[in-house]
Every structure is written in structure tokens, then in C-alpha cells.
Length: 288
Image (cartoon, rainbow, N blue to C red; front, side, top):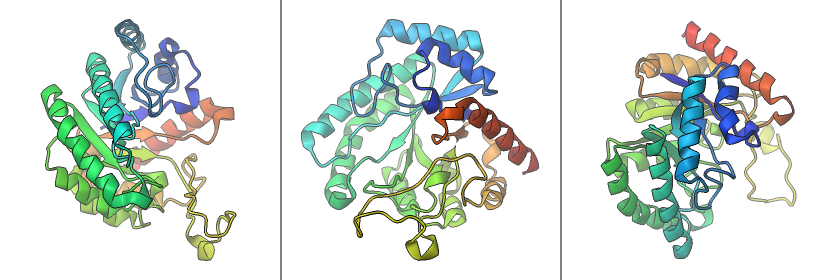
């Protein structure tokens, strides 16, 4: 199992300085999330071949590897022009990942919940175009349900992954989305079984607690989804049950699997948060 850092809180750090920073924080692996100078949110990748080569040299010098590359594109959005653009962006992002000697990518379904059936149709259309590219490159894809997506429920997401019917496509469980996935964390993880190959670790409060009044959003009836990406222990995810389930499923026994620290809440103390997460993850992994 690889333990990686999502360095989103350090996204203003120059790209070529990022590997050394990740190493200093105690991580050997990085999950490369959206950055304005590499793969920005919902736009075509910005990196050219020279940038990729320079970044690869910086990774090698720091002794850090890319465990996974996380692009976000509207490949399931209800607008066909946006979907076609997203497929083009995906193809370039896949090439960048190959050039970084990485064969794992992860992302979201990225459609709209208010147009769920149309978004699903767009998703399958995009997969018809992209799955052959993933297969040609030997690239794995790990997918997660996300708040405010056309797939939010964890069990439904596992079934969607099964429906793709490819050994290259698997399921990512994102712990801070637990309460939007249905709150049935152990059931989802066990239902996924060996299809669960990647994890995002951060804490969150249960927005459904206290009769749904944990958060009060105005105006009443708003469809906003509220969650956090906090340090472990600052929210209400049951980490004992989380790691006990991983142990029971043998998640840590495969070097294919990735566990990523993805705290976003503390840019004012990003170094302290990242080192705390690494130490805390190590404690839980050692215990289980």
C-alpha cells in the first residue's frame, strides 16, 4: 500500500519545489491534484513536455513518486460541447500521467444531480471514447461518488464501477464524503471489497445529525452540500471502524492500493496539518 499526500494546500508552491516539500513532510508519494500550472480544474492541461520532464527530474531528486494523478473535467456534464472538450482534456492528462511514469488516475463522475439520467448517458458516451485509451496505456482509473454529483450514494457508485466491467477501473472511498454517501461506511467498503483500491483520508462532521440541523443553510430548502476535509479526529468519521474494516479486507496487503491524506481546511497551518496526518495514519496502520 502506498501512502500519499494530496498537496492542494500547497498549490501555490512552485511546481518544481513541490517534490522536495512533499518529502520534507514525510511522504514518499504524491497524489497530483489540480493546479493552475499543470492540470487546472475543468480546463485543458497547461503543462508542456519540457515542464513534465523538469517535474520528473525534481521528483527523482527528492525521492518522491506520483502515486496517482487527479484531474477533474465535466465529462458527464449535460452539455455536449463541454463533454467533448472534457474528453480532449482527459486524453492530454492521460499522456502527462504516462510521461510521469504513473499508471493510476482518479477522478469523480462529474455530472449534475438535477439531470442524473442525462449525466449518466454522457458518462457512458465519454467512457466509450476514453476506455480504449486507458486500455492502450495500461492506465488504471479509480472513481469516487461526490457531493453534488449525479452519483452521490456509495453503493450506487460501486455498482457503476462494476458496470464499466474493466479490470482497469475501480472504486475510491473518500472518508470525508462518508455522510453524503449514505453514512453506511462499513457496508460500502465491504460491498466494494477488492474493487476498493484507493482511499481519501480527512475528517468531516455528520451534516445529517441533530435532526439535520448540524448546519443551517439559508435559504431554507437549499440544495447546497456541506462537508469538510479536516484533520483526523476533528470530525465524526469513525476511524476505528474505518481502519478495522481495511484490516479485515486486506487493503494494506496490495502495493496496487493507495491511501491519500487530503486535508484542505488548514492552509494557515498546512505543514503542521500534513505532518500530523502522516503521523496519525502511520499510527493507525501500525495498530491495524
